[in-house]
Amino acid sequence: MSAPALPLVMGILNVTPDSFSDGGRWLDPEAAIAHGLAMAAAGAAVVDVGGESTRPGAAPVDEAEERRRVLPVVAALSPSVRVSIDTTKPGVAQAAIEAGATLVNDVSASLAPVAGAAGVGWVAMHRRGLPPTMQDDPCYTDVVAEVRAFLVGRAEAASAAGVEEVWVDPGIGFGKTAAHNLSLLRQLRTLVDCGWPVVVGTSRKAFLGAVAGGAPPDDRLAGSLATAVHAMAQGAAMVRAHDVAATVQAARLVAAACGPRLAPGEQR
Image (cartoon, rainbow, N blue to C red; front, side, top):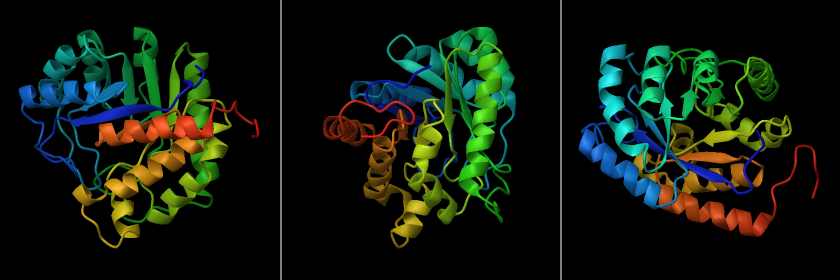
C-alpha cells in the first residue's frame, strides 16, 4: 500500500478504566460512541477502538471483557467512519472485524494472519517487552536500526502472506526511554524510506511530559502537536491523536507547507 497523499489522523478511543490519559472517560458504550462520532466529525480518518490499556504497568484484560468493551462501540461506529481495533488478541481482532473494523492496530505485531484472512489492513508496531515491565530498563545498541529491521521484516512477511494493506509504527513509548523516542523521531525518515506507510503515536505520552518539565497528560497538547507535525513533515502517513480537531488542523497546515508527499528516497 502506498502512503496517502495527505497525512491522516487516527483518533484514539480508549474504552478502558485505566488508560494513562483518559482512562474511564469513555468506558460507557454510549459515551464512547458519541466521542467516536465527534472525532469523525472533527476529521479523523480512522477511529481506533481499544479495550485493554497498553500503558506502562498496565495489567492484562481477559478476552471476554475486552470483547464486551469494544464490540458494541465498533459496531455502532463502523457505518460512519473507518474503525480500527487496537488489540493483541486474535479472537478480539476477528470479532471486531465481524462487527465492522477494517484495520487491526497490533502492538504485538503478531496478528497479520488474522488481517490477511479477513482481507483488512494491519498496523505492525514495535514493542520491546510487555506493559507490566517494558519501561523498567529498555536497552538497544542502535534503536533506530533495530526498530527499522524488526518492522521491515514483519511488513515483508505480512505482504508475502497476502496482507494487502500494511502499515508500520515505531512504537514510541513502548519499551523505550525518552532518548530512544527522540532518536526515532529525529531519524523517522529512515523508516519512511523503507516504503511502508508509517503511523506515529506520540499523543500525551510520558516522554513529552519529561521534556516539558513534568507536564501531566492533559497539559501535553503542545508537545503532542509539535511531535505530530515533525512526524508528518518527515513523511509519516498517519498520526494517532487524542486531540483530533487540533491535529487535523496541523495536518492540513503541514500538507500546505510541505507540498506533495515525497516518494521513499526522494529528495526535495
